[in-house]
Image 1 (tube, helix red, strand yellow):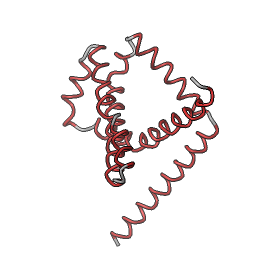
Image 2 (tube, helix red, strand yellow):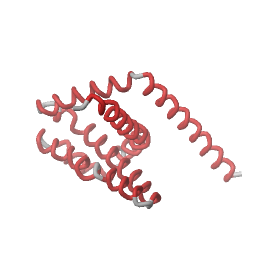
Image 3 (tube, helix red, strand yellow):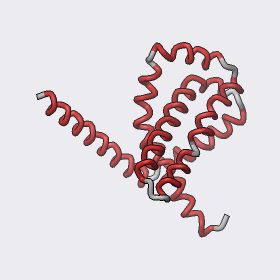
Image 4 (cartoon, one colour):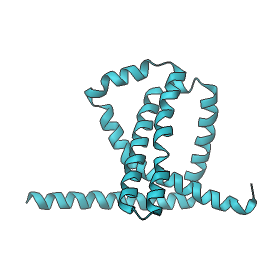
Length: 164
């Protein structure tokens, strides 16, 4: 790789991971709520009964189907359709993260029996740990936390005013 392009790829990767991190804070409560619903008990039982390799295939389905939605959203934004781009982006990322989170939680032990998955997981986790240790990441994370705290307080205030 051209050394001059390394900073560009780093910035793109950091933005990509930061967006996923921000949306994970939305997706996690949804995934946790879904995991408690009786409606999904059969599906949960079926997923947990799968052997390792079918679990891996199932785990990859949301990534393969929903990851390209970022490109669709980018295309929509580039063609001036910002509302549609925003909707596709938010729905796509949230769905992907909810599905991946739930599937990983249900199949983690089985996935960790697949050497290639473990190899990839260890490397991805190392990159994420390195990025999360960077001062700029910590700064962004603290700003996101402050924004979430502000939004929660604002929503509570708006709803308490409506009830009066």
